[in-house]
Image 1 (cartoon, rainbow, N blue to C red):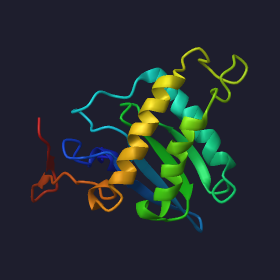
Image 2: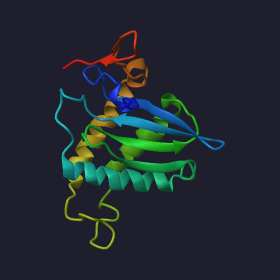
Image 3: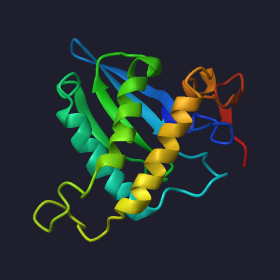
Length: 174
């Protein structure tokens, strides 16, 4: 099987930031998947599960209510490894072009007094939330983005180079 794009990223070198994971042409539209990386994979602990769930609810609500962006939002949700989230948007904007949106979304978590949609009717695991920890992670990431806005490393994926044989086989580190 062909290696998918997100597995070709050098996870030993990635830093928190905003990255393009992939871009797809769907009919006449470009659909862009962004990797919003909150922690350094394999070097920092993953985001607490309940806090990540809370971040998902608050930021999804923020994004889908932003008057300038709500029609562009397709999806917001956590990565399985809990080191970040995926944002899927209509259009082909660069990470720098969505920087302000992401910064404001994470800053908005500080204003939350409750978790939107955290009821048994609205959520599949409504008791698994941690607003205090979500605020901590959001503030940490927003401060990091603000202090690194001129650092190109927070916008450019480090790629893993793969040795490819003459017949096209790829070798991977074990």
